[in-house]
Image (cartoon, rainbow, N blue to C red; front, side, top):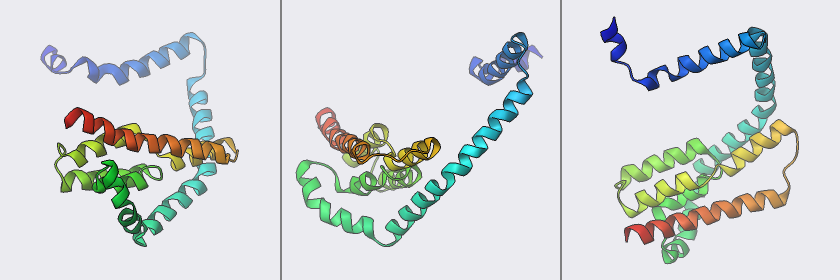
Length: 179
């Protein structure tokens, strides 16, 4: 029996320990844990239903944009400028999709790493870009749909400017560190 237990690492016990702590703490504070759990689940389901239309609209729009060749067209148009600035052309589709969709950006990122080495300039820029930017429109649509507030144009512009800084800095930092 001791041999079986010794094969586990401490990290294997973290989740069961957290659950046990929550149950113990709830018992000490005399909280009805089952009712609290059910109430939280109901509240989260209501939130999921409220934000679903925004998510659906975003996903369909991204699919239509990709299928129509819009990404390829924008990549061709931006390629001379980004090449001049030192931003790899392989990363342009990632920079276009990243503010819109995390899963779409992840598939673009995977394609970049498959076509180029992860240690290549494009692979490194893509890696830094994925870690330093946000799925802006997805995040805004989720947060504002949950709060039932319309985002202002200023907020969207600030978020897109932050993404642009992330794109530029990902290329700049990789260029400084690795070249």
